[in-house]
Length: 459
Ligand code: GLU
Image (tube, rainbow, N blue to C red; front, side):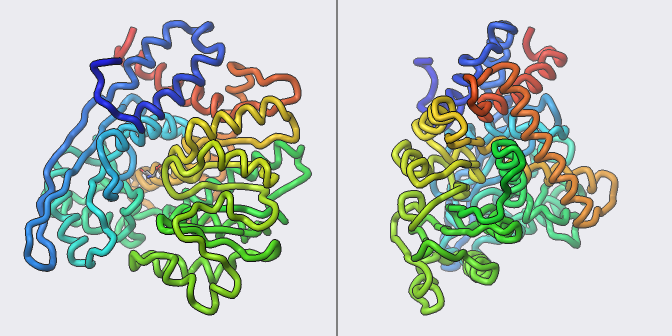
């Protein structure tokens, strides 16, 4: 490994997957898969480019653009674009690597990819964002296409940015095609795509709760701690409320907003207010001081919600960004009574946190916490992107009900697949719940490895 570049986030994602394969019986049963793991962990292609754009003061601004085309065994490269100042090749390789197996778990024909830029949308005008998107797509359009690589949104990229990029692709390539997902409803977007990741996480956790309690419990009455306040967190929160649960926290990169008391919940209206300020790229802190919010919520600057919740936590849904739950925070969640944790974010938990959750699952049995990794729990977003691609190819539009019922079925299959695979290859100790991280990793990996073998990618 010594001649490899220093890529801490990618190494973390690789080791997380590899360790679950190593600790299962997979390599004993199929030693040839070690070779497949070596091959799948190198991207098929990485495109890196310069993005020059003009700010509102007519000054030249320069950013880095990337697209990691990681794996195309199951379909065109598929995965979001992230615009955030932290973006670098290590982060995009970790995201692209996770995306390969996540996309495999949806059961749809999508390969894995990820891209983005170190451009920071915060503090930029709408015109600056448009000019950046146009410049970014001027280069990216040479490398993507409906049957080659289909980007979408991620942190910092919403329907607005997808629109600007779609328009530029169409102008340069003179082609109206499903080259991006997360499009607007009147120009090829799928209904439920904005809601899909958040809804999907909640649908997935419904299955966890049902399985762990033998059908006795549901979201009704559960106190749910959520981090983040972007697309994933907003729709997860709305679905939790719809199902009778209470949302006790939200957050952004500047701080956490938590309920002051042990009773109550964020309301749909409060979530919509937060969603509205996020469109304007504003911080939660601006709301926290208003009378309506300060009487009900406590705002803790610079903090994450996990150790700041007043009272019991039943479910935790990290839905902000990578490494947002540390080992100590994992212990605090367990101490607060949390029984279910599922990631709306990608790699939301550090390896320390996963180790804490997995040890608890194996030793405390029915009293334990149960952990679901992002690549299974948040697969609903990219799954509905896959449904958007299908609708675009067939030139049809499905109803909300049609898309929502397909999403529910995909999340159910994703849960059952991870569960069954864990029972087969990572037998839990007696009385313990199966490891959803091991099961999902093994199920995603074997599907991709088999397709790659058929294609002669390894032998
Ligand atoms: N960025 C999302 C994810 O992490 C969605 C990707 C997509 O729809 O292509 O899965």
